[in-house]
Every structure is written in structure tokens, then in C-alpha cells.
Amino acid sequence: LYPYEMNIYGDTGNVIALRRRLEWRGLGARLDPVPVGEPYDFAAADLVFGGGGQDRSQLQVAGDLQQRAPAIREAVAEGTVFLTICGTYQLFGRRFLTQDGREIPGIGVFGLETVGGRKRMIGNVVVATPWGDLVGFENHSGRTLLDPGQVALGTVKKGYGNNETRRDEGAVTANCFGTYLHGSLLPKNPAFADELLARALRRRHGAGFELKPLDDS
Ligand code: GLN
Image (cartoon, rainbow, N blue to C red):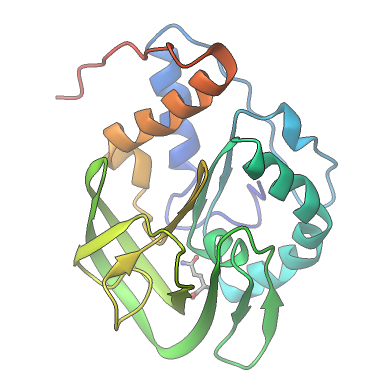
């Protein structure tokens, strides 16, 4: 989703990692780039990826994203796997108030809001999750506050995560994941990459589908 508009800090590397981990197992993948204005049927997707972007890029995609909101919300409800990073993660919440006072509406997949601050949260991050410790790099001005009841991706062991006051990082709704971790995230965290692939493949081929293990040493 928005491969040209929302792609910083190597976020497209996540797509390359997913494709390679499928290919190493003899599985194929078709990649459909969905830029602003390109019609797309989200019901056809197994896994949707959206990367980070600065406030200006977020403003550029916000209108297009609103038009896709019903289809995306339906896909999330039906269990399609989504991975959203930083700028796209923020837009999957209700809204982002930028530090220069603009309100960018989100699509409300996650129960959260983001408010820009003057200090950027930059640096390496370690997050404890049910899939082990995830490592990554964050760089954002937005502080994200989860609604009560919104499940986080994990707990920050090093770095900021969603904000500088609480220790939660990211959000999870059904099979839709949001996180501040760039890096790229998935090449650095192969177990999490496989979690996403396994969820997508089980949804299509049944709960018994097992991914062949890879040597990640
Ligand atoms: N523009 C957003 C912020 O600064 C997201 C930045 C990003 O995707 N790294 O909070």
C-alpha cells in the first residue's frame, strides 16, 4: 500500500523479506503495488504492507486512504494480515494531529490517536512480544496513545515505542499489526516475518498449514 508515497528507512525491505522467505520454501508470491488513485480489491490480498512516511506524505495519502477505509476495515474483520509501520500505523488509528497543528484523519482500525510533539523519538528499539524480542529503529514525532482495551504489539525494553510516557509499543487488532519499528523490521526479525506469513497462509489453506523451517543462523 502506497509503495512510492510511504517508504522510508528501508521499509520496502519488509516486502522483499516476505517474498524471499516464501521463495526459499518453494512458494510463490504476487506483488500488487497500490499507489494513490489505483483501484484495488483488498479481498484479493493475503497480506497487506504499509510503510512509514513523513507528515507531508501522510497528508498526500490521507484522502485516498479514507476512500479505501470501508474495504480495509472489512478485510481486517475477515482476518487479512496487515503490517503497518509508523506513518501508515498512525493513519490506521483515528487521527494524527501534527506538530504544526494539522489534523490528518485516520481510518480507525486501531483504537488510538497520535499527537505530534517537538522532540522526535529516535533510536534503536527492543520490544518484548509474544513472538520474542523484536529489534528495530524508530524516528517519529508522533506520540501514540492507545485506547483502554486496545491491545499493544508488545512492551518496550529499550527506546520509546508508542510514546515517551508508557512502555507499550504498536497495536494489534485481529491480524492487523501496527508498529513504530523500521529497520527494516522483518529481515531483522525472521520469527515475526514467519508469524505474518503463517497467519496469511493458514487463512487461505487451513489451520493445519505449517511453514517449513528455514536456517536463519
Ligand atoms: N510523520 C510521522 C511522525 O513523525 C511518522 C514518521 C515515520 O513514519 N517515521 O510521527
